[in-house]
Image (cartoon, rainbow, N blue to C red; front, side, top):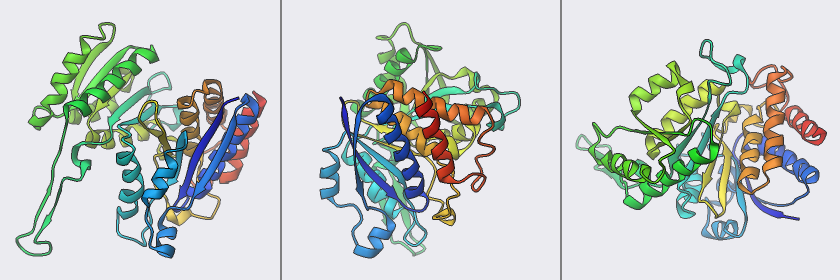
Length: 352
């Protein structure tokens, strides 16, 4: 029997609440599908920082390297500098574990959730592969003469041949494995940001090794338009870090909102991180109001990554059932209890 060691960071705001439901679903899945789970909780987040002065020590990362996966609830708290904890924990894990793929499924479960007129689940079912360790997020830059009339701020976009090629190969392999349209779209802005020509050239070179995959190209501004006009065109998208961050939130909107959107931060074959993409929503913290579906969907992604395909499909199917049957009436906070939705997913997984 497989035994999965999971590092769990509930984090801030609603993070611990939605994480609790995700872990409840994980435990139920383990019982039904016959694998073990050894979950270790870590306290890192804003409250821990305020209490101890500790953000995210190297010892924590060393410990997490010994696990099979990391599960993160949410990070962010208005009591500290904007982005401080996100940079310490989320970016810290991404960069130090070299999690070079940010995987964001854009899947519409039910037509009523989509803000686009006439679009159905058949029209909105694609995946964005976002490069996750380079670009403007690499942190090369800074501020000179801050607060003076002569202040200068810089942030450098950086792309390496290795970094670009490995994520493009991952995207081609994913397009092959999905077996739907077998189409891969590169999204960049190489016409204006000439450094991104490296993406165009590497994409074309790697494509020669995947003759069965149809390739396509779009500039990021046009892609935002086509997400709205014709989302059914897309199958798999690969894109630099910054643009991936932007277009996947637009993708989340057309699949029903942040309440259903999950992501994986992946280095194939190594410990990787899974999380809902929503923020910590401090105003709902501790009220049992937050929708945990995105957090539970992240559990499904984690199970799939760990090789428990049937369990992953069962969790995803339970989410689909709740949304398509109208049992979950709305994703709006407070419509249902956080624990209520978690219990429903457990019930459906167990019924399988």
